[in-house]
Image (cartoon, rainbow, N blue to C red; front, side, top):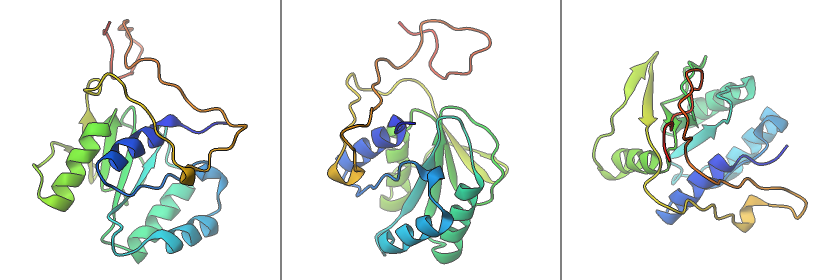
Length: 181
């Protein structure tokens, strides 16, 4: 099991935009007590949001219990979830759900929520605002910058992104970026 690159890709862009972001990897291997102790040690008056991400569009009980704890103890904190495709999750705690590559759209959302930025487009599905991040990101070199606080060990393998998209458009595929060169 390795670290998923998605959260670190988003963190890289947010850090470039002056957000102080901490990524918690291997989430499902933590206990609820461990997660809440981490949150107690990290959440302060400057904490604006907590985001969850998944490669396989999953929302485990631990995520639901964590989100519930956050909403109960810090109701002002926005909860965000992101993955490549939309899947209806059994939760009442997610405020915004992203589909697709969200590096640009998450920054737009945060500007809207916390610094009077332009409104973002979303669909409300079962009480959750769903934001579709269509297309490839507008940059040619989407790098990931890891920091010391990401606790990368010398024996770990890290994800490498070689492309954004697929030249095929197979009927069975739900990947959001199809038919590109």
